[in-house]
Length: 619
View (cartoon, rainbow, N blue to C red):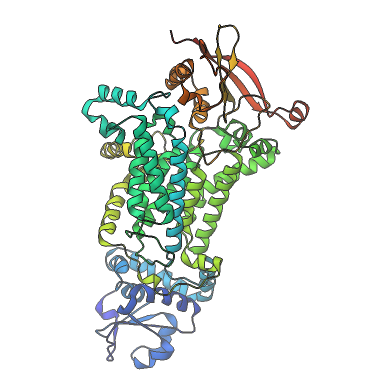
């Protein structure tokens, strides 16, 4: 808009003054938000109060649009007035730049302003519907405190759960000793091995050091849970869990392991750099860190839904995926058995609900308050239902913890019937160093995240060479990852039964703690603890022994009656002397029907298929 198109007034205000129609409820709501953004840089007054001081502005203009009187006497109106006032705030300068320099932006925004101004009552109702009575910029101090403490609890669960199994999985007498794994990696790759496999276990791979890492992780988790040294605790937790994830090989290759690492890493940029989290603490809120965590939640859920639709598995398109899922998932719960008995129509509806929530609800993350809260409710509901029907370690808890970041302080105040804290909105900028680090993380990770989300649309597409090289250099650190559980639905349930024999004639099965074995044994609840050997047995059954080299380590450990491995099982049929031979037989399992369970007492029905591992001995 050129100079000649503006009015000028003789009564020049000491600060820019925005005049608005005091009878407009829509204006009243948004002026409060603009006042918050501009602070003391702009004055605000109703045209009824101060309009008479500027006779150069016809009264009819006040009814058409807001008027901004600048310190040089120049008058702007409509969208331009809004943008010029918001340009006084650091976060609003881009709007005025776009208005002045971006082709078409000014015309479009002025047209939109006219449409809204002519329908201000409808716009006011829409504002109330989507934001409620409070349209001020949301703050997330309560969400930050709850999220960080929840993350501490989840880290604690992860470390303690692994601690009870680490000797049998990757200890010196375990199934896949980490020392042998790292030695092999160095022999194959050479000096590059520590960069490809970043782990403190390069310093020491003994059982004692593995316990040390678990212990330090558990202690740091307690510190974070208690609110002490949040940023430093998060850094230690990330390093310890990354070290154990690399050392854990296939036993720590689950999506919730990398999700915990990515969440924990990004949380470093969100946590306040203070020695303690307090309830009434208004330490500066790192909004870039918050954005990165919300982007992670969006990526996690949207990719999980989209890959199902682009996988080529027609069971997602014809809504029959849950006809198979409840009985073929790795470790179902008792409720999973009951869900399998439900009507096909209900399971089709449930499949549609899963796709609806995973594909569409993530977009509500970026919406106004009430849309955001609806998205949060949908995501949390889905995670709760998944947790009720299947044991997925701490995955559901971690996703729900991320959802806490969608609930702003105004929502918590209403939910808990507490008044808002005064002055909390003034501390909205991150400290300099943390802000710079968050900017660097955003610049580095945003292109890769964008590509990962795009790859969910086109799974076979290849990234640009430079981006692929950059991603490969970051991938070992698990700080930016793709997600997508159950993209292809498993339609049968093969199960491996491991058996031992002293003479090669009579065979006795080993009993695992959690995976299906005896047909009369019901599914059990085990989450948030993850029995990693039981989980890995599910994946092994989908392939062959040659594709799961660790399975030979399991057989060898059982032939030696390795105490650290045997304690991972529920029953060892050879407590005194180890067996001479070990074999594995593959069965097809399915849930029993209501009638079969009533008549036989069995939760499972099974049929022997073939030999998975021929009889082997230590010789």
